[in-house]
Length: 464
Image (cartoon, rainbow, N blue to C red; front, side, top):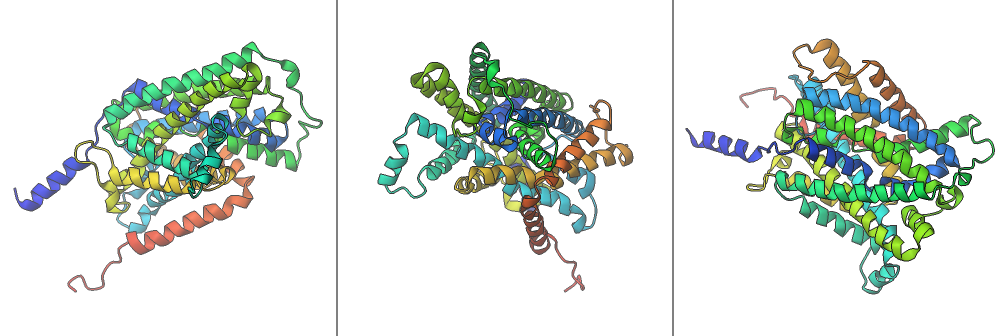
């Protein structure tokens, strides 16, 4: 074997990941990702979007959308298991062409994830800040006295880097850490649900005048509330990003996706109903730490502080799971030659994608300095066309033009769920016209970078 052969062999060996995730770990990582901090920071904005508890309609509609889209992810994840989720799917469907430009769509998926994915992660750290202040009200003043630039935003950024460091482990260790963190998440959620149901006050579930009068304002409010609900549901596909590290992916991935979506949808609806049946919705709309206010209303501040620690545990679990999944997207693209090669580097002994993981960690830390509403809306809107809609189109192409691709799992009632999903995504995008500039900016910059650094022009004289 030549030295070049040895180099190739070593490179291949370094890039191999380990199939260490079974069904329990897969469900745990999905659930931890989906539950997270979302409902604990978005309920005020969610209620404000439609000016009342009728916003729960948006939660139900978003749940239907997510379940339908989850079936798309399940079918593609079972048929095309690999690292990178949507990137991997679209590369297998669209990207295997001789033309470099034909591979642009998979590249754009990764490019937009560097923005939408890291903003989504950053929203968790930003949203956790008011809960830290609830426990330690003097902390912002102390940080100011210590001349720490950015104050609480810097604290959020440092926590982001700490979670990135925790993920710098072998996948078997990370998988079991995911289960431990998920247990804490379930305890937190069950505490809210049980406390709410045992103190349920139906008289608080009053609706404002004309709550169900459908007009342009009502429809825009529905779209805004759906966007927030979708943000809270995000993560139902997390295990698809780790397909290369899942055992028996043809069976495990669909079961993990469908189980986590149905479970979390039921939990979310129950939890939100429980909260607004204890805290009047007009008061809830004004709160930045609604879950702490909920517990303080029921049991007093001391118990609320203890519960807030559980909320921060839930944040940690969510950030842990989502960063893990998203870190595999640039890695997979680089390994296949569709993204910058440096992102394909894997740690020599711990077998995790070092550059990809830490790049996401650093970008997330930077976005921790932005307003919460900005990162939430941008995180969802930017990915609708390039990820969700493109992926649904890809599934139909697999069904109709790629008979060689085996489908271990097929969505029920095809194509109805996928059609419902695409209509839902386009509705949400259509009600957020003011954010189309962000979508256009990410796509345009991705095209420019692809043309400048990825597409290699064919030389006129190959011998030159």
